[in-house]
Image: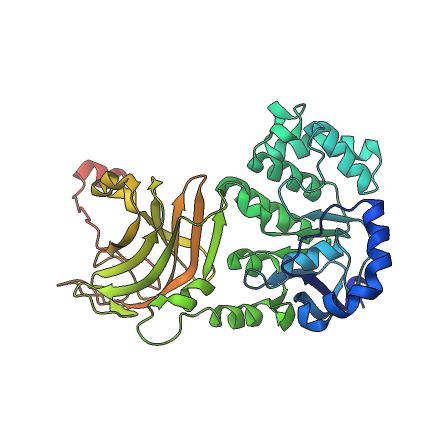
Length: 435
């Protein structure tokens, strides 16, 4: 029987909401202690407390060499769990025990000192992992080459872009051979080529027999790397087992419901992720749905029909260069189609958008799709001002109907099945004989 690398027992983490602790001097602390008996009856009554259990009674075990995927919606507790196992934060109750050297990649530049150079940080991380300097030196060139930061290795990392920091941090964690590797969704910050190489490196890590806890919204990566998965929901484990069965449960819970599939109000807010850079919300979607060319709300279509993505949004203050983006993707999260409002030259007249209510239609042409189920995510973005993402707000099925006069009505299981132009040219006799 394999030894345990990780044991989590009745783990819980509680945060207090709506209160930021101010900076306190020693005098403040002593005054607070002296006054505590007099204010406890008022300030510390349960009615005045507002708590959030980010993790609630979590228990599981991971064997040495096992690759475990952690999945769940934003706010489910995945990152909190990794932070506790990394000893970054302490649990409120229970415990999490990790055997062996642990390398964590939880956010951009994890474990890096911004004033030190890339070279210094590579050696510092190696020492933290318990390695000798000569061991780090033996891997140094490989680490730098994989990260692609050779020109900047003697530059302080505070001058690195977020992508450069991620590449170097992952390269260090993947090459310095910790017994346990904890990886969060931070890999999504890198470009597509780096993500591809990172997943390849992760496969090598798993074949080397090291223990990995992998948090990702990329279901293809989870399916490829992990033999087992845990689904977290509101701080609790709701599924733990073989990857395929857990993914089926998770993906099945992310449907847009019944009816015409249009989301608005509270249903839409549940899918919303806002990143605001100027402390105020300037715009947000009010309705997202699908319709046919005649305006009827639907979630099922034939491949010979036009499909219209309808997006209504409200602008509260003037914004410049507001982008509306539609991503269509598979149930595993792989993007198969992307379209932007500004792809249409007519929309460029709306470079400055004044306050008001707007509705845009993205028209997906007939004879484009195969016979599959499609999911979609919508983004409203104003660079360096606000990003609003509405995850999996589109869900629809397409039945492939073939083409006029064509003998086949099969899509071959493909997502895209456009009617393309084929040229048939008879080869000259000399070319036929040479072949």
